[in-house]
Image (cartoon, rainbow, N blue to C red; front, side):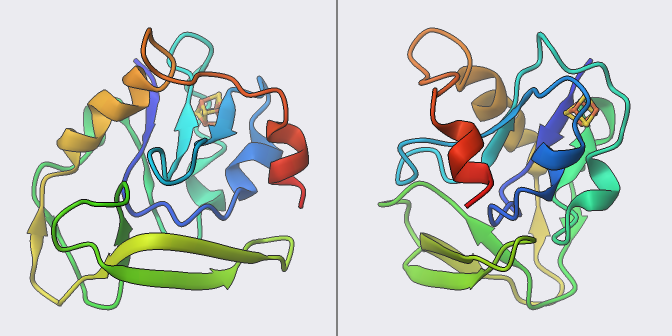
Length: 143
Ligand code: SF4
């Protein structure tokens, strides 16, 4: 098993600081990989990242919800060009630095989302065809 970062991720990066095995990296290029990603081969399922996420975007793989009901006001991020995701989002990460995400959507209360669809990109990021680890991730996470 592993932990999964879902499309509720707005690149806060607090998870990176607490992961004891340093297996969380920011997606790059950001327009194609807008979330942070957990290397499933390295994650030890300690759970430390879950409470660190201000957007409650992280779940165990087994508990990734297939019928998440939005309370309203959450933002979901997707690769640039995804239908319906045409709202830029800007905020601060846990270090107080500005984060900009080009392609998001604000969720309305009551919308039901299947976050199990976000599991595959977490694996794909580290598999053939995905960018995997990026040498500059530590600098990016600490910006
Ligand atoms: Fe890292 Fe633990 Fe989260 Fe896995 S569950 S990504 S090991 S902090």
